[in-house]
Image (cartoon, rainbow, N blue to C red; front, side):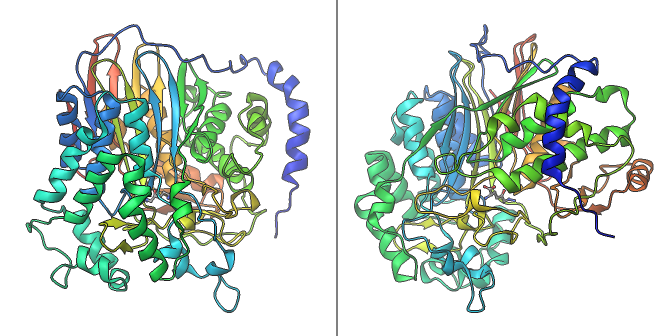
Length: 573
Ligand code: DON
């Protein structure tokens, strides 16, 4: 039987109907998010949690040199580019939520952009079917990098130290070498066949003809020099001059379409973060061109109409999953680069819209997602990276960085050490055909010259009366639900270790199933959810969440890295 339901008509009706129903259900209306304010106190010490030992140490080193959280963020990001290239790097982009000790809050959008010559036909094969190779591998899959411009922007506008000082630890690690961890070795092995297609990629990642082996020291002199030029000349050191020219030449020689103008005209965007109140906490998170903050806000707004603490576990999970399902549906339909598309954000973020959605949730039954064609997402693996920083003065950085799929496009531009991203796949390259994370997209996220592709990155900061939490994760489309669950765990009172260790689950509307980390649901809960109509599917791996918390009552920081990767990479000093 096909389930057919005119969702928009129903919602519109409910939107009209529920302003009254909402007030009449006895619950207080959701109050607009409080304006950002400076916190009255300073921690006096600092905390950093990242996915790599060298990166956390680089951040601490820069703090010790007198840098603030934003200088430390530059050091962490640039070092990750060297030691964790499978996840992020100067050939990719990032999104950051910053809270300055003086109360200023800003979202830094250092997302990649499509080159001017982007041509949707490049992502179709000769039969007009999606060409997954050009979407994910080689120079056509790469957007114009945003990370170098973002690091220069952080130094100029938010840091205390010259960019070159904050980049120094990364330059040193690249030049002197480091021992790659197992995850990098595995990522190179996983992508070996694609790496072999590009000579400069072979030279960098298969130096003796094979992936590096455990214990071998590995150097990256080309990237060291590129980082040095960035440090000396800022934006121009990467986007113009020698490096800019080498990037364009390498991309074009291998069949790509970048021009010098694409690089020179790249711009960082400062945007107002999304701020949503939930049960006395203020969640500050990512606006478009990320879909993450809109989805998190929509889910929290839906959940704010229930008292989750009064429900048994299956019903609590049921409501969270139904809220996820509804938020992801809007993700697919409405969201894209705010500089290119008009989005109904007032509606999506409105408590009344959430109240309308709430009315479509039955208390004991899953809603089928079957009004849209099912997608066929593949297991994304877990790349991309997130780190969190709080400095002694109370400056806070929550930053998620990516080159998209493991090892990005696998394409290294000769003579630069820069591994390019494959972020073009985050566009809806072919309407209603899933990307690598199974996400469907519409015209709002169609590629266009200079446009940013929609992201799921959801760097977030949660402010409560007694505690602050800095939360984020990699994980493709699951970033959004993992961050949401981290926020809920923080609000439930879990400490940093408890938040990162908590088992996870995910629903993204299509495919219509709940992905579950083994052990997340007890057998009884799994059975109850199945009876309500859910299809549960074991899933591994999950993202790597790195969290710093600040207890305002004791004025102490706590930092924890995800045990799924490596515990102990969160440090307080
Ligand atoms: O921006 C995005 O949403 C994706 N490029 C993130 C990719 C990712 O998290 C991969 N990790 N699993």
